[in-house]
Length: 73
Image (spheres, rainbow, N blue to C red):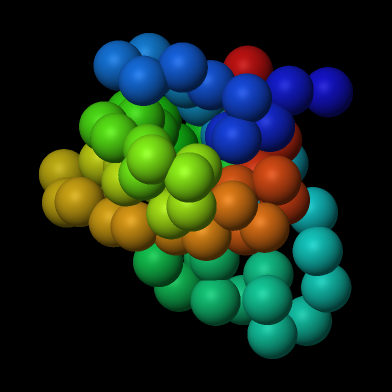
């Protein structure tokens, strides 16, 4: 299983599945990260947290813990 945290800077991947429960999963979906959407990794902070991504045409920063819940292909 490859997660969003494992993707290198500059790569574009497709979301396969969201792991997590309840409010955390809902928050990720509310940000526009849903099954089948393409995500581009723009930057990673020096200590690895947060990760800056482009999804659905806008830029977004997510925590490492949230990135680990997003399974990608």
